[in-house]
Image 1: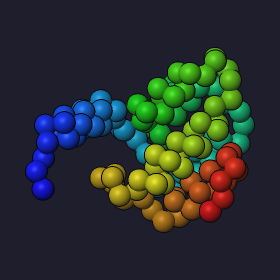
Image 2: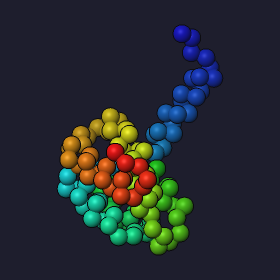
Image 3: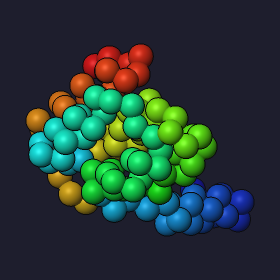
Length: 118
């Protein structure tokens, strides 16, 4: 199969986009997932989450999404959707393993804060 110049440019754009978006922390352990579950029990503003819980989920893509929220606006649905679409559906892209029980806790968070169920 011949790689066209157009396709090569598309691949390069995709790779550059991935490099621009970074993840520095994930709720991959039971301890982190449980703490995140406790945090998600009450409404949390976007800046509060970014300032205080980057050790649980530190991800540029999530933080860019949270920038669209007003100060103090409850951002739990955005966080839960990030867990669903960017963490749980992409577990294989992470260099660290997720503990099985942590995955189950993350699924519970998604079920509670979105219309999705596992």
